Length: 96
Image 1 (cartoon, rainbow, N blue to C red):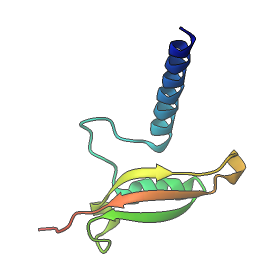
Image 2 (cartoon, rainbow, N blue to C red; image 1 turned 135 degrees about the vertical axis):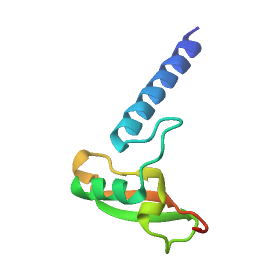
Image 3 (cartoon, one colour; image 1 turned 180 degrees about the vertical axis):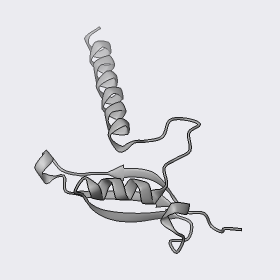
Image 4 (cartoon, helix red, strand yellow; image 1 turned 90 degrees about the vertical axis):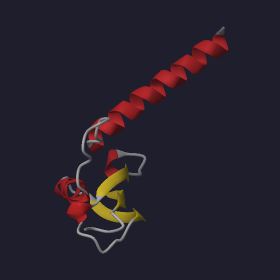
């Protein structure tokens, strides 16, 4: 009985953390258009983050307005150590 309660608690904590993280980074909901990479990057910069782009797919020569964010990672153990944001960006393979 105790193991089940522990697993349930762990799941609820993980689900709650995922919700908070998605709310903080403005993750789109299902069916919504993802924010352009430039919007997300500019928002993070305006909040004071140093932003590094991880090019996940597509051509990194595309305009960031044509690309979308697939993930944001802001590592650090304390709020003071969270100064750099790593943004995963995907771009189209071609524009027509």
